[in-house]
Structure formats: structure tokens, C-alpha cells
Image (spheres, helix red, strand yellow):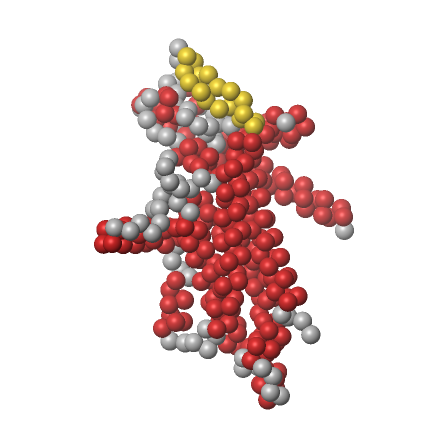
Length: 338
């Protein structure tokens, strides 16, 4: 059994290293083949270089380079080199001046912000979603239709709606109830949290209300009612006991969806989370001035940054998943017992 677990762990780690290498591999394969036919200005915009010939990479060379990066990262774990990156400072006579920084020290406050936001949003969505789902179990009509509609709304649409709503209320009342985006002066806390909370909350409410409606028609529930058991006792020891395993089975999916949505939400609200570190590399700050290119490290230029960014997201995912599992365990010990 332990050999199987070790093999699974090794496969998981190698899978992360390989996934982290795919964007750069695709970049080399897709752009290098056409770099010779691109205008010089396009190469400056996309690659930040004036020499298109340096971008010509054959397919075997591209794969060899990727596996060299993976091997170098594994080798650098022992020395700590894999957890560092080159941070651009300035140009000195057209030469880039940079310094070596520790990735996890630089991103620690960003990771903490993202993790705390995710954990609190997920736990609150789980608790309120379960409670309201139980209360709305017998509700039908427009409430059911509203839940069916809300669950398909993407997070970016929710973010835009909340921002527009705050602006609309401010123009009518001159009262700013929340910051619509983080700036150098103020930080937006409420709207990113609500956006992150909304989708798992609606999903859990919909799931709990649907399954509770089915459980209420079971024979053992009718028997419990005929014995004169209180409604609270029936819900806690009979209905909730059957609902919690269904929620637990979906926690992995909920945590995965929230982690993916977190990247979009933090970017839209300019939140001081891990996305703030990732965005410069993902955006590839387009411009003719080389200084604009090197304001912050690029995920595609430094392989350890991509790997460590994935590890950061995986850590946030497991913290979120673990918090929800602990919450479910607490509910089971408090209510779903004999």
C-alpha cells in the first residue's frame, strides 16, 4: 500500500513539473516556427528581442530544453536555487540589471491573502449554503428557477455586476459601500470576497435543497414524524446525516472551481493576492520600450516561477479543501450522530 502511495506522489509531482513546462513548450513550438516570417516590430512586442533568429527552436530542441528545466528544478531543490528567481531592477547601458530573490518570501503575503480569502469564503458558503438549502427544500417555482439561473452565472459576470451596482448606488446616494478595485490607497475586500463566495454558496444551496426534498419523502422520515419527533431532531439526525456525505463528495470539485475562479476574481479586482505576482507574466506587458517588459518576472522566461506558482495554487487549494472537510466533520459530530 505504501509503495502505491509513493508512486502516486511521485506521479503527482512529475505531473506538476510537466504541466508547468507546457506553456513554454507551446510558446517555443508555435512562435519559433513562424518567427522568421514575422515583422521585426512584432518580435519586439511578443518576445522582447530584436533578433528573431534566437527564437528559432526545433521540436527536439524544445523538448530537450523542457526536460533540462525539469531536471534542473529537481536538482536545485537541494540547494534552494529552485525557489529563487531573477527580479529585474533597471537597465544599465542596454544591459539588464537584476537581483536574485526568494520566491516564497516575496509571495508570502500574497499567498496568505489568497488563502485566507478562500478559506473563509468556502467555509461560510458551506455553512450558509447547507442551512439555507435545508430551509428551501420544499420551495419550488421561482426560487428553484432562480437557483438554476444563478448557478450558471460565471464569476466574472458577478464581479462586473457588483462593481456596477456599487457605482450606481454611489452616484445616487454619494455613499461608497465598498471599494470596486484595489488601488495604492484603498484595498477592496468586500466585493472580491462576495464574488468568491457566491458560486459555491448557490451551488451548495441548490444541491442541498434538491437532495433534502427527496429525503423528506422517504419512509423513515415519515416514520419519524409519526413518532412525534421534533422537526429539529428529524433534520439533524436523519436528513442532515444523509445530506452531509453528498456534500463531502463534492468538496473536491468545489475547491477546484474556487481556485480557478480566484485567479480571475483577484485579477478583476486587482486584489493583493497571488495573482498580482502572476499577472505580469501572463499579460506580457506589450510595448516597444524594453523596460516595460521586465517590470516583473515573466512566468515563461523562468521555469521555477511557473512551478512555484503552481505549488502556491495547489497549497491554497488544499487549505480550502481541508477547511471544508474539517467543517463537514464538525457538523457530523455535532448533529449527525445517534
